[in-house]
Length: 220
Image (cartoon, rainbow, N blue to C red; front, side, top):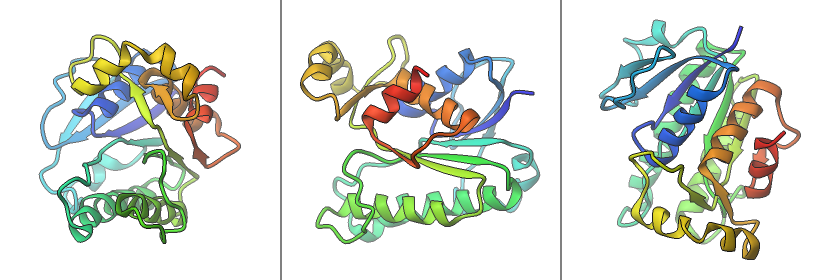
């Protein structure tokens, strides 16, 4: 049987790209998209769960059982937010979902998208990096089969998808140059989605995947 996957954040650029890769990958049998609004994707693999409160899963737990992987692509910018607000929307929200899924699906692999520069020590000067590091560390302590943390830098969007950011589309046109000049800081959205699917299905030697790991695993 193929993987049964949960995706958070499919209405954002990263989540939409990961969903796109899951739709075309034969190892993925079914996908539950969890979001605040519909992702507007119609496909035999896809079902949706519209959730208004991402801190309370008590009424939907039965729909969350029996999954083999979660691709958590939900995130917000830290710009204009206090550390307390950003912590609630990043650490608290993510750990709330991950804790429920770990309890309901002990055989699950959890794949979390953080970012290049994430601070695993939780002690650095950059606020968002500390909070992301704290989130990664908390997920790693939960009783999942495995947890992987993906740290992309600049992501080249997948052509034809609707949720790509304007700046990403613009820089995507010079991606071949960026790949040559900054290979440790860039990846494609297709590589990110593919590497998450492969980590969930086959495992990987490292629990933290930087851009080079993402590109390498995607093509294995």
